[in-house]
Length: 213
Image (cartoon, rainbow, N blue to C red; front, side):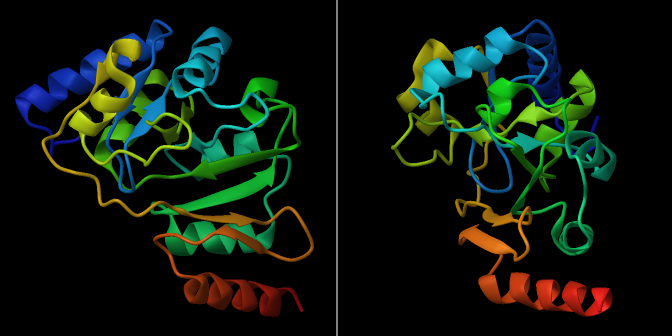
């Protein structure tokens, strides 16, 4: 557990881990916006996240992981460009779409063949992931279509008592969503502009392509 945590925050995180292990759902601050998570191994809890967010069931859920070994376990293959992006930008505000391995539950991929992953640069989700020993659902803690919340109060305003715990570290999240890139095709695609600029992504992409020549 991070030495950065105060006694109160440590208790909140420990309670969050216990709730997640029991199949609950927890809202937590990240380095982008508040996230809503559960273990990917509990189908009923993942279904509950869809209901709480009013999220269409054909929309896949992004995942947060603690390190590259967890990414490798979730993907069928890790292209060279993905290695370069991970090395350069993670932990951080970059979500990478990769070919999903058979270990990723269909409810996470919404029946598709890809999985979106990110290593957050924030001690709370990292502590939760390490505490439960599995990747953590990393969707935003909002009702679908509404703004992503930056504070525990904003989470409560949107989701109220529908979640089992809202972890509050007393600080607002930075507020800029992660950049989303898809590396499953022949050419890298930037699907959402976010905290990491298109220019930075393209520079790393061109560098990795050059290495492959």
